[in-house]
Length: 332
Ligand code: SAM
Image (cartoon, rainbow, N blue to C red; front, side, top):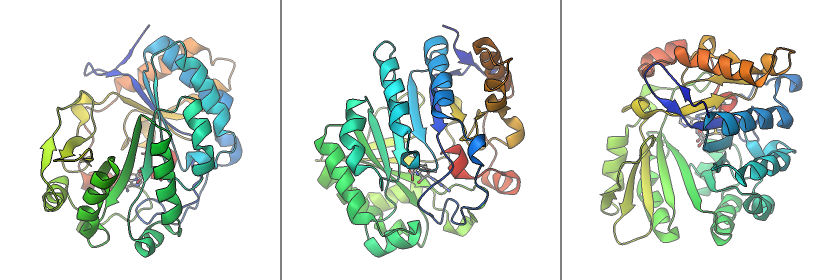
């Protein structure tokens, strides 16, 4: 086993794969215009994704995998990928997660559970039907709540709600989300609003995790959980309940020191940071499709790009002025 390490001694055991840049929602904070999608032949095929996943798991110590997008469930062949990953899980220690908007999930939940999906993060930016519609462009809140209920009934080991909090849009719903977590015994993750290409990030819509936490504490006492190595979140149990809330402070309090994440974009670029510039990616798609694309050559390309991984990502103003990637291609 040859783990992927960077020049700051960080070992990378977590791979996030954006399986498509297409999405059926138009979230205001992501890329509501949804223009400039990759041509189909630029997207990695499921076989290509599986080859990378297999190589990273069997040869380089990846033990955690998350599929994201775009919306991963819009890929018609997504179950084929889960099947291949499920086979790997029979021999290698691997936790598999998916981040999804939940709109195309309900009917597939039993198959996904049977194929070994461990962790579901479902985006849920409002508990108010009209507001949910205006943030996401889709009147889908009741359906998504059904998917949460069904996923919990089916016994997925982890079911979490992802909420991007924007000042003046949904910040006043933080107490409702705390109640939701407590009533349904699940985790709600409050995510700081991050700047990306085409999402028209504005600092006055931004609210940091400390302010979010203060609002959340109006609803119940938050008991801090032990810090997990590599964790991206600050986790709290809501006193007297089985509900949890977490805060993801990517903007105000970065967690780069424990970063163990590699990201594969929908068009097969390997990036070492969510905020990396396109010039800091390495093109695994072209390599995969070439005669030179042996397993060793792919691993070398990853090691090379890791040599330039930055110690920590820049501040938001720098990101706003330099960021040229859309979130739906990177996958969050
Ligand atoms: N379509 C899926 C979904 O909606 O969950 C997966 C892709 S989405 C890009 C992955 C995660 O990124 C979601 O939880 C979403 O809320 C989050 N996200 C997207 N844009 C964001 C932004 N500007 N700031 C913070 N989180 C963002």
